Length: 273
Image 1 (cartoon, rainbow, N blue to C red):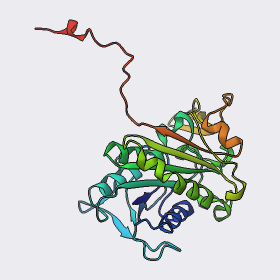
Image 2 (image 1 turned 120 degrees about the vertical axis):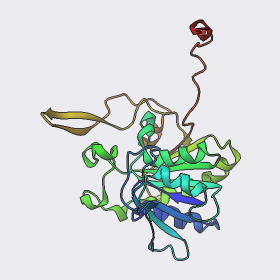
Image 3 (image 1 turned 90 degrees about the vertical axis):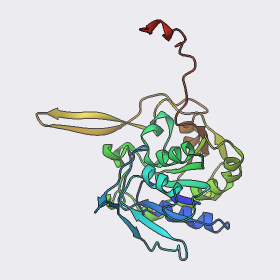
Image 4 (image 1 turned 30 degrees about the horizontal axis):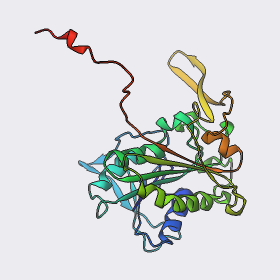
């Protein structure tokens, strides 16, 4: 199993996810960006040195015996090269997370966490994205799609309930592996002790997300962006609504699918011969 993220190899969420999954007997390899790469979607970005992508072995706290690599690349790129054997035998499962901040609504399009899972699914591998709802608009950055970096000092990273999201992910693995490889499970957990979690519910995608980017100021040669709380009403049954009620939310999503309701049947009329 590959475990990756977009918060970086040193983020606590990936450590808790890897530890929790390994404790269940799974063979785990950790490979993640060597720096924070939030908001990269499924981008294929990598830094090369003398024609080779930079990969460094890492020693991750409390993960003795689990191989871990920091890669100068985006989560989607890391997932793709893992599926081609970059870190050992190609994985049959990919877990991405635990992300610092919820990935909900149609804004999952921009998430590097979800983008890694989409990349895995597009290449025939079961995949799950896992996130913890820890942030508000005031704690996020527009460049990262709402995620704050741990060094910001705005919250105590280690005090968050990463293990709650990780345990929910483990419990959902049988649902993941029994479903189609083309579908990603997008899991979001509230920042609560596991014992206080009210349960897990299937959530539909909210209209966008919890926060949205806005242009705060523009001038000659610059644009300054900011994040603001979404003013969209919370609809019952959505991923955002379940989180607000103290439940973990899981949504089955596909990255690319055809819009079959669009009528393109008469395109032969454009033939030029």
